[in-house]
Length: 381
Image (cartoon, rainbow, N blue to C red; front, side, top):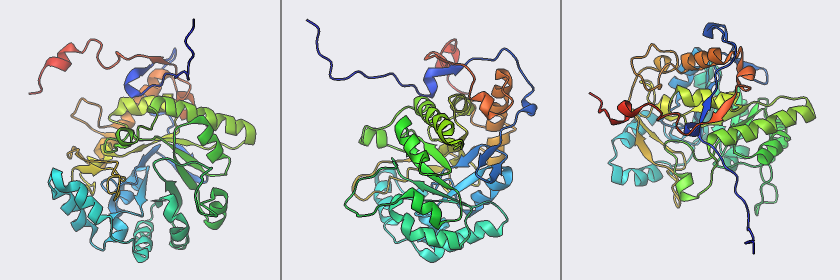
């Protein structure tokens, strides 16, 4: 007698379980086009810096913008709670491991100062660079008018999981169609990992979607809540939603794979899985200019009742320019990310990101270990 099944699980894949198949034609890497378009904005690099306090401040936002990417400033973090954020960040970096969660909970319990929200945006704009900022759904209605008045360029509305259909006790929650009418700028929404949620979000008219729940190096959501989908599968599912939405509406909404990147290989696989851009956290937290001083922590870490993050030591490996463009003296793929992307595109014969999204991929759990016994057993000098 056959046993009844409650449900059947489908297989999902992360970065280490897949590989990109070289193309039948190759092209010179310097002939590849890797531009990212979000509404009327065009960026030379498909790279966003995570809206995390250890990654983005006014200084790094300006630097990345001038390099061709886009940094997203967290408007609910240290930068908008304190007049002296550098001192607060240094205090967090110095905190003993056993005390860091309590320290972060105390630091982030200070109120958000609306005047600082405006000042940080204006400082980025004054440098002549593109200003992107991030808020959570809970604070969007309150801060959106300030963001618009300060003339930010792009608004990201982010939470661990974001959907277009949210049930709460509030009579009227955050409605994305209404938000877009109230702010004169593109709105990026995230995070999601499923086809249906991504499609629903796109139907609200937003400008881009962030993909990823729990993959970040400093995030513990997957351990604490047990939710999330490995990034390759999440990206592929959301890319399918993007393509279906374009078929229905004629409008193209880019998806941005957010989190879980360790090296150039991961970055290249995200694009082959369907990403239009990537959002980087811990890799850019290693930059000499990064405000975390060699440390990185999840933005859910300071939660007063259920922390879902941890402070990690990432170290300082080079300038932001070196991490993105090289030259590099390390062999782990954590620097010259743009060189890695262009080279992979050349190997696949992809002239642009859309063509890279069509590169063949295979399930390859041995991709990082096959033939690498010496690397795995030999200690570093």
